[in-house]
Amino acid sequence: MAERKLSIRIPATSANIGPGFDVVGLSLSLYLSLAVSYPISPPPGPYLAPEISYSGEGADEVPLDAYKNLTTRVALYVLRCNDVSRFPSHLKIHVDNEIPFGRGLGSSGAAVIAGVLLGNALGNLNLPTERLLDFALMVERHPDNVTAALVGGFVGSYLKELDEEASEAASVPLSEVLPEYPPDAGENWGLHPPKPPLGIGHYIRFGWSESIKAVAIIPRFELSTAKAREVLPTQYSRKDLVFNLQRLAVLTTALGQTPPDPDLIYEAMKDRVHQPYRKQLIPGLPEVTSKITPSTHLGLLGICLSGAGPTILALATEGFERIAQDAASIFKTFNIEIDWKILEITGGSTVEQ
Ligand SMILES: Nc1ncnc2c1ncn2[C@@H]1O[C@H](COP(=O)(O)OP(=O)(O)OP(=O)(O)O)[C@@H](O)[C@H]1O
Ligand SMILES: N[C@@H](CCO)C(=O)O
Image (cartoon, rainbow, N blue to C red; front, side, top):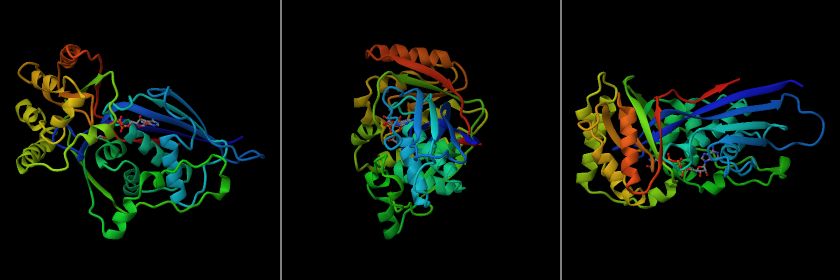
């Protein structure tokens, strides 16, 4: 029986990088990988729903029902928006995941991009990158993680201001975008989910100095992005806004310079928009980010919360192990154990047939 096989690989991401809340993201060398197969002509007999197997991070909690799993729900959303009512029969998907859940390393953004790429490939849709991003943004509504996961590198993005009709289309509740269809609903599923407006997200890739690696200091507890967003204020002072804008403007160029300048970067990775409010959820955050500096740790460039946390990201050119071990000692005084990884800044998502 002739089979079609696909391999899809999505990198982890770190969002914000200090002052760039909801704006910048960085793709990192930890991966969510999907091995997909299905017969080109389905064998005679009834339609068979997808079979998912899963290994690695999140294996004990991720739903294996294709109508409940985030990646396959997103894939079905993309298919249905493009007049394909269901998955191919006898579809098999094996997921292997290296990205820990709820740690600020973009696990949900990776799962969403995996779904968009899976839907695009299964439906032979050949959607351009910009359209793939529109679909991802209908699900994960801030662009930093999904854009970096899709295109790779150090990326800045913004959401376009939409006209009234498009804003309405883009603000439908997530439950309508990704309903949990009953697996036996067969051919009768509607084909008209809310389609994304065109061109929601826009992005640009900045330069990145090859000498810089990322040390991910990963506390052994989860913090959901939703919870970490609830503690943020809805309004900011002009002083705090200008503080972040000044640093972000410098940071986007400073990280592309060789050799990178630690004095410029350390200060440029400070933030007043999200980290001060999230410290109540991450004991030890202010201590780690203030005690590990370029003057105490040779090679360190800057240090910040990764995404919504609790992971802390240190950017450095050398001295990686010492940075990680000293961060571990500080966290230990707060009774928090950590794992750490030295990561490369990597390319974007890939689909191989
Ligand atoms: N591979 C996956 N398959 C299915 N669901 C996933 C997968 N990865 C993540 N998720 C879902 O996303 C949730 C984590 O999302 P959340 O936004 O809270 O954290 P994060 O994406 O890891 O962190 P951040 O957005 O700060 O980088 C998980 O609890 C799980 O429900
Ligand atoms: N910019 C987002 C990233 C997390 O997904 C936040 O900090 O809440």
